[in-house]
Length: 55
Image (cartoon, rainbow, N blue to C red; front, side, top):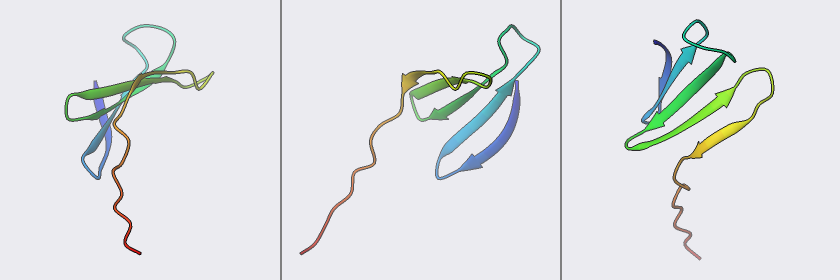
């Protein structure tokens, strides 16, 4: 597993030799998504950002 990026608490890991198809994982706390590079298919979920608006 190779970490390729870390931003806003999200860690991106690239996988290309472990098993097919090539993909990456994005982790945020206990949440995780997997994205297939060729197709863009996303599995899993990350939390929605909570935004407070003031009027």
